[in-house]
Amino acid sequence: MEIKILGTGCVNCRRLEKLTKLLVSEEGLDASITKVEDIVEIMNYGVMTTPALVVNEQVVLKGRVPSLKELKKLLMK
Amino acid sequence: MTEKILTLHKSRVGRMLQPVVLLILWIFIYVNLQRAADFIVFNLLGLTAGTHLTEAVSFFIFEVPKVMLLLVLIIFAVGIVRTYFTPEKTRKVLEGKSLFTGNVMASVLGIFTPFCSCSAIPLFLGFIEAGVPLGVTFSFLIAAPMINEVAVVLLLGMFGWKVTLIYIFTGLCIAIASGWIIGKLKLEKYVADWAWEVKSGQTGEAIKRKMTFAERIDSGYTAVKDIVGKIWIYIIIGIAVGAGAHGYVPEDFMAGFLGKQNWYGVPLAIIMGVPMYSNAAGIIPIVSVLIEKGVSLGTALAFMMSVIALSLPEIIILKKVLKWQLILAFVAIVATGIMTVGFIFNLVI
Image 1 (spheres, chains in turn red, purple):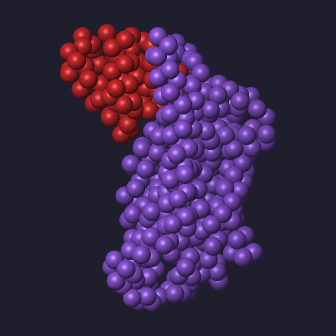
Image 2: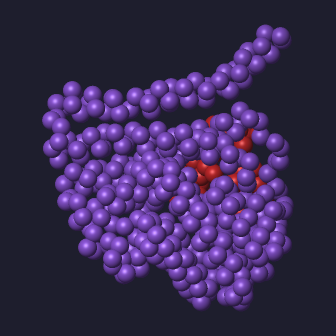
Image 3: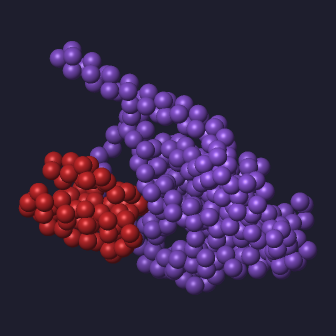
């Protein structure tokens, strides 16, 4: 699984990154996590509100930090 | 099977009823707040009426829960309303709108569309890319942070609905006029060149489906948790400073300095406001005391707007996509707008 976190480095983006890393290691998921900070690349995903979560090149969440429960649902699908 | 459906139905009704029950509780607490505050101040703490200390303490004990209650209610409501407005929808509405109409719509939509200054750049690029005119985009970017639910709650709590309406209305006027002027000046060449080449792909769009009403209610709860969790400390500090000044700083302390008769009061207030990056939560309780101590309403309004709308961090963020000429024009135009509002109010009231 390929996970990307889109965000220019605001507090919420870092929170989402931390949360995702925590969940992946806790659940032992086979996933790579990349942080995308380049604004042009972020725009390529058609995202206007950060942070956004991309799983296997699909934007699954944008504009907010999910709860741990919601994030689990998004990643464990 | 039927049992399962029944419990599901029950829980759904429960989720719809919960806000109603909470609202009734809310009204009960709000109505009895003054009595409760008096009870704490005079009966539990045993303070005597009329002293500075009593005044300060009772101001604090009454204002903190009052503002918090208003905050929770309005943020909850706005949290639900906002699920109907996404940046994507707003962009769609504004695409290719003519200048004046576009400015008016962008400013009004700016109030309701969820906005965080950390998303200012992707939002700006997304709007420009979709063909929203530059001036219309600016109207949105000015109105969105200036007229936000936290500012509205605090104004409502500390000044009443008249000042709140004045703030919203003049704020809208500034956003509309500033965006319109920026559009008329044809400043497109001062947007960073690469910004025009950005293509926002529509690949991998999140699954689109209508939210259920229960989900919208959940968004309301989340908004309350997020926003109140972030700003409660500023409100308490702001009101504490306000309470201290309320009891101890002499009346008319500020009158000579930032009162009506000083023409430089308004520009001075704006200049002081720019580097202050306090959110509305911390600044409005303090401003309410400034007014009490003799600062005129126009000057106070100008100060508040300057703190909220012209913040240094946001300007630094925008610097990534705007050349300095456009930043300068933006700051000068908005500052002039705020100054006009300040002068008009000092003259009229």
